Amino acid sequence: MSGCETLSYYAQAIGGHLALIGRARSVTELLADPAIPGALREQLALALRLREFASRELGLPDNDSYRQFADLARPYAVWNVFAAKEFSVEAVESCFPVAGCVTYRGFFDRADAERYAERLRIEGFDTVVLGVPAYSTLGTFADPLLSTFVGWPEAELARLLFHELAHQLIYVKDDSSFNESFAVALEREGVRRWFSASGREADLRRFHEVRERERSLAQRIGATRAELRALYASGLAPEVMRERKRVVLEALAADPLFRNFANRQQIAPNNALLASFATYQQRVPAFERLLTQSGGNLERFYAEVRALAALDRPARDRQFERYEIGMSTTLR
Image (tube, rainbow, N blue to C red; front, side, top):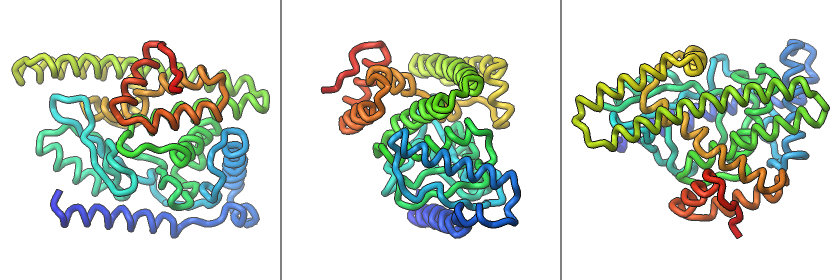
């Protein structure tokens, strides 16, 4: 991007975040306000209980994040643009001073995101624009509860809060897959402990059923990504790869598992979507194995994750590969 475009992007990011923060009000004050609707009051109170649980039982940061609430009057907090080359299942990275290099570019206005995605499509990239209900400033600011997710069902609200706080606990620059997969693994463990703590077996059973569906979808998408990666490395003529790519993606689109997911997001499969999914799911099994190897002890688990984070990227990836084939997870 040119210098002017870079400044424009940072301006929308800073302005969008400050506008969001400017809408935030103390949850404690809102709960004392008799004018607050009952449904919102219940969800804010639930969010505070989840917030306390996150710090007390999961060892997540105990700070001012998620102790305020902001009504954004829109469906998503930001819209992320993922892009991949026509014959690649790896996401194009964007690099920033604080977050490092990440596999997406976020916009506070959907029209801005769509314009950026369209420009990349014209240049020959596969792109996808995904609405995102929340994001983390990694503890730089007190991230508020948002209207884009505060009304969610209990398990989903818990997942999101635990996920975003996980980013504040451990974050590695230039490794989106590490960061997102760690947060997904921790959110799942956090929800399991949340329901187990109160003996809510039915809720826990439903949560496990959702996890199994997610795992099945991740495996299906992962298999498609592997198939396309092999195709793109085959050296076939572009027109042949293009046709085979179409067939593979149409097969994924027809799969009932994928259709259920795609209908909610109103998206079609392409390289960018497969890359975006890998960002959040690729390393989850490895982190879950590491948690099991840690005996479910979160303090020990976090120590192992930090040891992984301290490795350089090639060494970290090799260690992940060992986890994924069931080898020893001991780093020391």
